[in-house]
Length: 179
Image 1 (cartoon, rainbow, N blue to C red):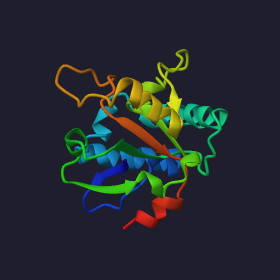
Image 2: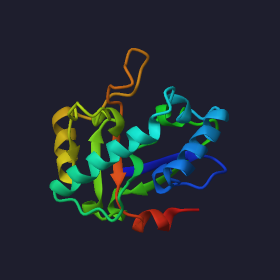
Image 3: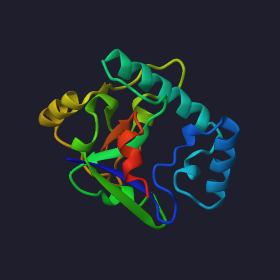
Image 4: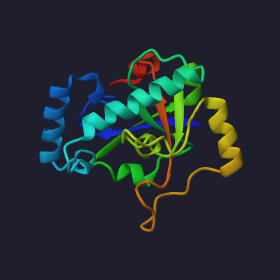
């Protein structure tokens, strides 16, 4: 299995809005929205960074509670699959991808969600997460039980799992793969 990182060709891979101050992140997010970036366009109410910080904090503490050993406060996001996914390519005007074998990572620094972490942790204060965060062995067991999520189709809600997201809580392997 591999972890895939998708990014806009011509930009540095593994850039992370969460590594910026709120002001810097909002400024960059606004710039990306003005460039019609697919991710930035999903923020009609201007609450993305606020909600993202809530999601990441929930995931961080859940990961520690399950025995994970994060080396960063916010993760790098990747997709856990055997091959590239067309739906992920569609997120970019001109996509590029990095494919890293899962064995390159310290498994104690990776968590997973069966689907995207944003809907998984529902960044609304009065709601509990709909589903769990998994360690490596747990996600393998879940895949044996449920199979891989089906590819996205036009009948699916954005809340429906269509891939397994990996949250990488360390820069160690990431730094070896930066261009």
